[in-house]
Amino acid sequence: MIMNEPDSKRIWSEYQKEIADDHYFYVRSCIRQSFFPGSEQFFLKMMREILRKDVYENPSHTTCTGIGYHTDIVPFETIMTVIARHFALMKEAGYKNIAISCVTSFGIYTEIIETWKHFPDTLEKTREYLFKATGREFDVPENMAHTSDIVYKFRNEIASMAKYRLVNRHTGKPLRVVEHIGCHYSKMFPKYGVGGAEFPKVLSGMIEAWGGEVVDYPERRHCCGFGFRQYIVQANRGYSLSNSIKKFESMKPYRPDFIITNCPGCNMFMDRWQYTIREMEGRTYGENGLSIPVLTYEEVAGLVLGINPWELGLQYHMVQPEPLIDKMGIEYSHSDKFITKDGRPLPEPGKLINV
Image 1 (cartoon, rainbow, N blue to C red):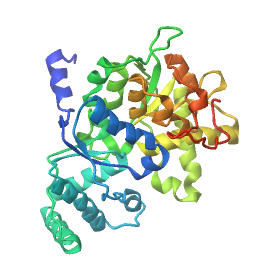
Image 2 (tube, rainbow, N blue to C red):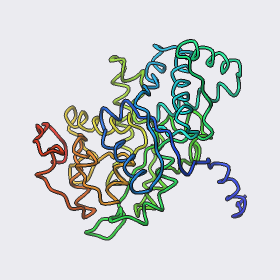
Image 3 (tube, rainbow, N blue to C red):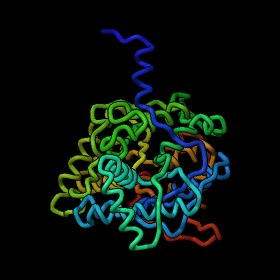
């Protein structure tokens, strides 16, 4: 049966989610702060200074303890109380919309909210636990979004201010981009992700708005390999690595210029595993024997807006970005790459890729 346009639009509308326009209570990611701190910092700068949005963060908020939960170390009751405390901080600050930086945290928050919806007694128990522990009370957020949802929402506004596009300046053709959606974003509770599990649009929408071409390949929805039980348990790391190799081998024939992710674990893994695979087996997956740069969506937005690549923190990736930013025609200084804001030189790490 051929689907007519009204039917297709109706079906697509069912995969959409409401994303608040403004006034966000922001919670950071422990993994992102460790590996890609420039991404979170630029998100705040972009939202506040470029898009002129109200974003508040409380320095007293903590990790969601998601890794502990998924490795059966931290009980679910404890997790719910920790997240309830975040909601209490949000309430005390006068906010009703929460913006979550980490995909694992996003999955934890959605699981908790769904649990409270279906089992109201657990919500009341959590209220009791939090009050006994802290004396605080909380409200469930009126709107919950992952920060990639918010960048997706404002993708066209970003495009209208762009200084560069995802276009190869030498050929004039769109850059070929692999988008990788974190499993905890759309697979656990699909209705909370833009496009659900079947048609996730959150990253591909950014790519298209900023001039790039989305690469479709057989293992597009395959896990990056960073399953907590696979990687954290040393005996399982071969399984983790084999998953990553399967994904890289699948995308290689399509010659991607870079990978964009919305999950800090995926970003870290797909970046660093390329180094591991190259050292172990001599394999690379980019053009001309190079590896494929793996960027966060904030880093891509920053490049499009003309932000200095080193201010975004691209030098802290294992796969270095110079081949990509040269294709985009972005100007940068090699001498500023490992210099602090106050002018002090940083030690240059060894064994980086693509340099």
